[in-house]
Length: 548
Image (cartoon, rainbow, N blue to C red; front, side, top):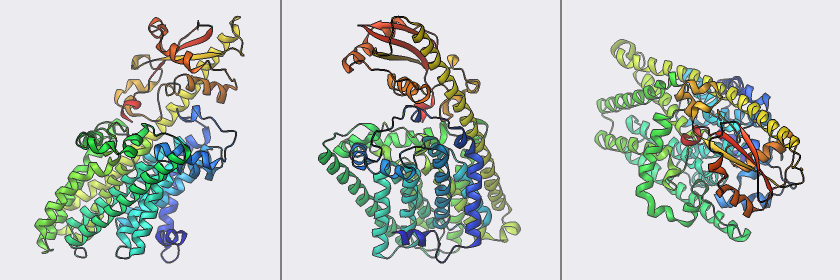
C-alpha cells in the first residue's frame, strides 16, 4: 500500500519540478493563512474541554469507544501526534497533507497548466475546510480526506485492473472508519470527473464512463458494508451501544432506509445552506460562489456543444447523463445526510464543496485547451468566460484568507474573554465563606441567542456573525457544566468536585433556569441547591451552531 501511495504521488517516475513547485506553493500558502492560529495556542469549543486520559496510549479503548460512531480508527490515527494535541504540529501535518491532496485532485482532473495547478492548491490550502482541520487539531480529518481522494484517484487513473479496485476499496474503507463523512470526497471527485468527460471526451465513451461509475458504486457499497459490519462487531465485543451522534445509530441499525425520502429532501436543503446561503467566506465576496456555479454550467454547455460539433458519439445520451449528474451533485456533496437528516455540516465536513469548486478549474482548463488560440480569434466570449473564472478564483482565495483570519482573531478574543469570566467566578467563590473547594459544585449555563448581548465586533455584520468559525461568542456553551469545569481545569488549574448525576439532572430541570433567566449575558450568580453550590452563568450561543 505504501508503494501505491508513492506511485500515486508520482515519487518514482513523475516527481517533476512542476509538481514540487506546486507542493511548495501549497505549503507556503497554507502557512500564510493559518500560522496565526498555529502559534497562538487558541482553543476551539472542543479543545477547551479536552480531558487527557491517564492511559493515553490505550488503543483498544479508543477503538471500542470510537465504534459507537463508526470512527473507530480516528483517535488511533491522531496518535501520530502522540497523546498531546499540539496546534503547531497538527497545523503542519494538515498543511502538508492538504498539499498532497491537491496533487491527487490535479491528477484526477487532469489539470496541466501552472495557473490551474496553483489555483487548485492555494484554494484548498486557504479554504475554510483547512481552517476547520487546523482548529480541531485532529489530523484524522485530513488523513481520511486524503485516503478518500486516493480511492477516487485509483478508480479514475488506474481503472481496468482488479488489483486497482481492491486498493481503492482498502483506501476508502480506511477513510470511512477514520471519518465516515469523507465518503463524499470520493463520490464528488468521481461525479465531477464523469460530468466533465460526458461533456467532452473522445477517449471515454458514455458507456465506458457509466461502467466506471457502476464499479465505483460497488467499491462504495463494499466500503460502507465494511464500516457498518466492523463497527457492529467491535461494539458487540466491547459491549458498547451506538449513539445518535452524526447519524451513527441510524446507520448501524439500518433505520435510515425508512427515512430515505425525507433524508433526500434534506440533502438538497443542506446543500443550499452550506453552498448557497451560509457560505464560509466574507459576505462581500460570497458572490464568487454563485459566479463559480454559473460559470461551471456555461462551460459544461460549451463543452457539450463542441462535442456535438465534433461528432463525439452519443451526444443526446451524454446530455441526459450530464443532467442526471448535475441533479446528483448535492447528493455527492452531502452524502451523509442520506443516512441522517439531522447531520450538521461544520467547516471540517465541507471538503466535498471545495472539490466542487476545484471542478470548475478543471472545466475552465478543458475549455481553454480544447479551443486553444481559436478562442481569441473566433470565440472571444468563451475566452472572456475563462478569464472571469480565473479572476473569480483569485477573489475567492482572498475571501477565504480574510474569513480564516477574522475567525482566528475572533476566537483568540473569545478565549481571553472566557478566561476572564472564569477568573471572575473563581474570585467570587474565594470570597464566599460558605464554599470550600472540597465541596461539590455545579455550573448551570443559561444560554441566549440574542446577538445584541454578544461582545464581539462581528455582530455588527450579521451575515459574518452567523457563519464565522470557530466561534464568536464563547467556548463555554458546548457541553454546559463540563465546558466551564474543564476550562477551569485546563486553563486556570482548578479542579472541582461534581455532584451526583441525579442532582445534576435535578438542577437542570429546576426553577433556577427560569428564576435567573433575566441575567445579563456574561453575568453569574452563586446560589445553592440541596446543599450543592450552583454557579448560574449566562452566555450567548454562537450562531454558527445553527448553520455549521
